[in-house]
Length: 319
Image 1 (cartoon, rainbow, N blue to C red):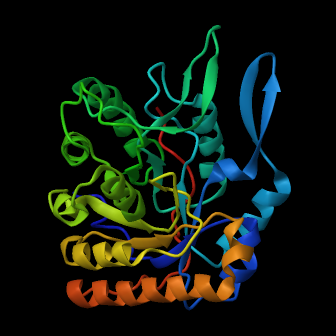
Image 2 (spheres, one colour):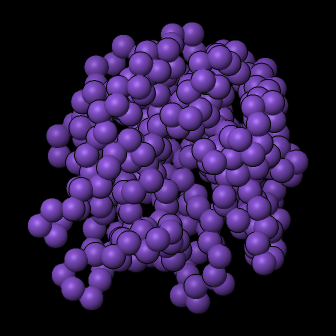
């Protein structure tokens, strides 16, 4: 069974930040769900040379109240699924706790890594998300981890395509599209297709994004991210700080007929951009996303999910 084929059609949503709460609650006609990064609700604790994440009670309580009105999906920031020595177990422990307290329809993570082996026995944080090479070795590392995550919480797991800013690795066995298709063929995960990330890569490396997207297994797309960013020293950056470029809206329009299992379109925005853009511009982006969603529903004969909150009991499958 394809990921997304049995999931509710959630519609259009936005990433959660507590600064966004007034905007979210006052615009339910434009925002049908929230995408939560549980890492943001935590503080990092260092004890005996070990790092752990602990929920901040007030932030968690505020989100729980909002989640009574809006369905939740999870988008991780700190798993570091591609680290050679193993993923970030502190993140997994934290998500285990979150799954016991909050229902969510699916969870996702970036295709990359942030933790690297340090000079000592510990690990260092790279400071930004680093891309994986598109090699057989990377595929073999990822497959069992993805399969575990597909089962751990009793809901689908999605992998998200990322940006990269270095020339192609000379040892790559596949292109980005071919690598993603290999992952989707060899695992049960769905795809969180970040169209802005893909657009950045196309601009920075000079390939045709429309042609490339049509080579992707689009029937595995469960969620789409749209966003806007900035150009710095000739590179288009994945910053999530601006309006969605017209070209990204065009790519969304292109692929909608080919994504039968799409369940959600998420507008991503960093919290510091709220006062810079203003609510009017943000709502304009959500309105455009709603127009795209209505077009999707017309093409596929689907309808918006009407139940605000899932009745699934929170929890996760044992290892």
